[in-house]
Amino acid sequence: MVKSLKTQKQAKAGATPASFSFDSATLVKQLLSGASDRSREVLIRRFGLGANPERETLEAIGDRSGITRERVRQIEAAGLDAVRASKAFKEAKSAFQEIANYISSMGAIVPEDALLASLGKDEKTRNRFRFFLTIDSAFFRERETNDFLARWHIDATTAKHIHEALSKLYASLSDNEVVSEGKMLDLFLDELKEVNDAYKNEEVLKRWLSLSKHIGSNPLAEWGRVTAPAIRIKGVRDYAYLAVKRHGSPMHFSEVAEAIGGLFSKKAHIATTHNELIKDPRFVLVGRGLYALTEWGYTPGVVREVIHEALKKEGPMKKDEIIKHVKRARFVKDNTILVNLNDSRYFKRLKDGRYIAI
Image (cartoon, rainbow, N blue to C red; front, side, top):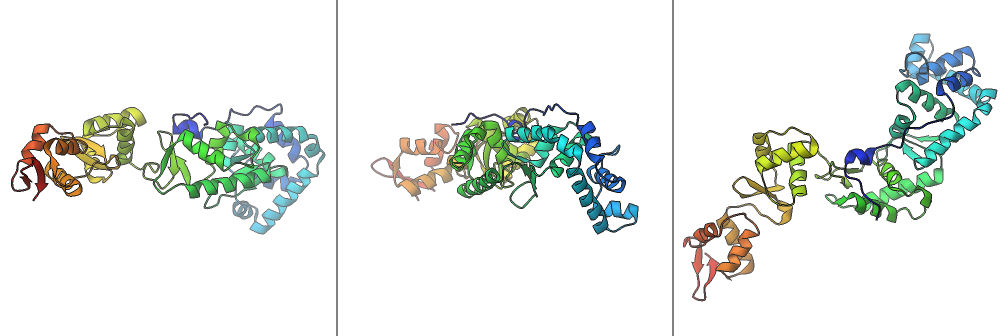
């Protein structure tokens, strides 16, 4: 099994910041020298390669220049073609190979935001690398879809396998299923039979998982469908759920509020936390201020109702058996159970010492 990390932040982390032998600003100037003045101006504005890093739309450039959007697109295309045909572009092949090697080290297919963030610390540098990626045919950009984030790749076959594997992985998960990070990576590996083993390391696998818009993780590094309640963290009640689940046993609502602050650095008022626990069916009150998770087998209701449900399900039982059943569902003293059991309005003791519900 692949070793797991502990936090969502680590799961989303990119690769080590890129380091190249060339200067990106100098290379941009050399490449743009191959375009006409008009094309160079459009490329600078389209890619944010000038003093202002803002990338302008075709419409914005057209409005400022008094030409149509289509004409701007034509000028941009002509400029890119001129750059690709220039001597500077041919001389820059080693630089583009360095970028390709770096993308390969990240897994051959990388979410666009993660890739650009690792290529440049500031917007100007990221714009330069976006320009490099655009002009060399070795790099292919796939647009954002309903299923995947925008991404760049250097290997169409690998990219196809990753897309298919992510779709199969998502389909294999049930709506509310949540698994550990290690388990999720193992499940993913099972779908990656045709992918080069050289890519199959933990960092790359999690980067590939981040391509999917349907699979995600929570702050406890548990994974599942992004629509699962334990993954889709929206507020105090979701953080409370994770806190109690991590604790593994019932907690007082004040402890839950404190745990939210400690685990997730989220401020949670005690009263607010209590109100959220009361309203959420994932929690059940099992003692004075103590809340457990319904998924642990606890059911709502006072002690008398728990006794009644147990007798209805199991049939007549002796006192000790009833106490054991109730204590699996409630944190209460034996005497509290006995007081309820001896209420003749609801329970009757048979001659053999067993009790039934009336």
